Structures are given as structure tokens and as C-alpha cells.
Length: 342
Ligand code: PEP
Ligand code: MN
Image (cartoon, rainbow, N blue to C red):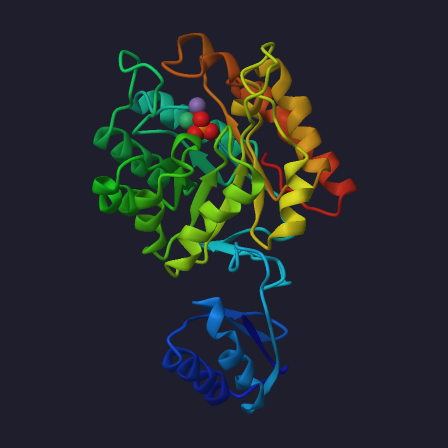
């Protein structure tokens, strides 16, 4: 059930509702909006009549049921879109955000060179994996702690915000300390203990869609994080697996408008993993922006031919610069802004 407060409701009345909800054995989630506050009540649907009775409390406008199972992610619960503030940079608003960098952090030289280049083109976020999920145990699995240190160094030198993947709840503190956004990879989209662990944090989480998760399952995965009290979830479409074998994945751009109609959470698109081919990245980045994405994640490497992971889908910095210029033009056509570098 959701309890919608009247516009300008007194704080003490909001608190009173929260307390009554708790007393009824429900867990209240206060969603603050610029227009009005809403309290989502999560608990046994059988007691919904008792929540309904709270409609008589002061400053309560109405009490309405939430019908879909992803209650906190549901756009019905929060009609205003969620904007996430990452150290002063907003994701989910008017400004399109771009996260760029190598698949894996490989060396100081590689990460610093990439960071400087993507910053010069206008990206505000640097990505790079320190703990890499690889299909084969014999492949490069990341520099681990050393990789996190190198990301922190790049942050210090460039001021870029950092995005890196967490694979194991044991590394939670280590990763949380060195990054601005924690990435949960496609392989872990439904790793529920891992989702719970980031749900207990107060920092942004970039959740990638599993290659065989439906949108409903994807939103239920986000719900795991939201239900623990962390509202800062960014959804990332990164392609799904189909019968087509010309490319690594099929970038499902239907999901962009579909997710935005189902949920208030920001949606970004990763055309690098979504195609697996560097020649397809720029056109699909343009399409993602046209489809309404709030941002993009792009793999960039100074020497893709020497990359230790995902070289074939990585752009050289010069091509990334072209991508930025091209998407800036599309952004203007869909009422978004993108600040270019240089
Ligand atoms: C990545 O971002 O490098 C990655 C491993 O992506 P995904 O989880 O989408 O496969
Ligand atoms: Mn990769």
C-alpha cells in the first residue's frame, strides 16, 4: 500500500504516519518528492485494510494499493523520476551522463591515459574492473586490490567519479571505499545475498541486467536493493542472449522506454557489451540516447588490440570522442543536455 500525503504536509504528521505504519507491523519507506511525500508500506497484503484506515490521519491525502510486485521500484509509487546525486553530478535528470573506461584496470599507465582521454571528451565517470567475472578461470581476472588503488589514483588526478564492480560481499568495504558507484554485473543480477549487501549501503549501485532476466525480474532484483533502504539504484541495459550469433549480445533497446514506463529509476545503456563489436558501438549509443536513456556506459581502451579483456568491443579514445560529439547532437533532439570537453 502507499500513503500519499497532501502537498506541504507537516513533518510531524509524516512522522506520525510512519509510526502508525510501524505499529501495524509494516515497514515504511518514505519517498520524498519535490511535490509531495509518499510512504510505501511493505508487508503482508492481508492487513491492507488496517493501512487503509490510516486515511483518516491528518495530512493524509489518500491510501492506494500497489499492485505490481516491484513496489518500491514501481513508477506508481513514485511518479517523479529518481535523480541520483553522485558527489554533485546528477544522473537521471536532464543531463545525459557518460561512464567510460576500460573493461579491466590493467596498469597505472593504461588507466591514467584512459582517464585523461575520456575526461577531455566530456565523460564525468571512469569505469574499470578490478574484480572481473570471466567465463573461463584461465583468463585475466583483474588486479583486485591493486586495481582499486589505481582507480583511486585516477580519481585523485582527474576528479572523475569511479564505477567498479563488486562480485563478493566480502569485498564490500574495500570496494565501497574506493568507488563512487558500485557495479553489480550481469552475472550477479540475481545474486540475492550480494544485492542485500549493497542494499545496506547508502551509495549508488549500478545494476546490470542479466542476459536472460525479464524486465520484471530485473526490477525485482532492484527491489532487493531498494527494500533494504538504499534508494540509489541505476538500471543498466547491457544486452540479452538470443539465437543471433553475429554479435555477442542483442542490445534490447525496447527496455529503455519500457523500464522508464514501469519504474522511476534511471536507465542507462551499455552498447559495448550489448553488441560486443566496436563497429556497432557508436550507432547503438546514438539509438540508446534517442530511445530515452539517462546515460551510457562505454568501454574505452588506448590500445584495444592489447587489452586483457573485451578488446574487440573497446573504442580507442579518438573514436570515443566522435561518439560523444554524435550523441550530443541526438541529446539536443530529445531535450537532454551533454557537456562536451575541450
Ligand atoms: C563489464 O562491465 O565489464 C561487465 C563484465 O559487464 P556485464 O556484467 O554486463 O557482462
Ligand atoms: Mn567488459
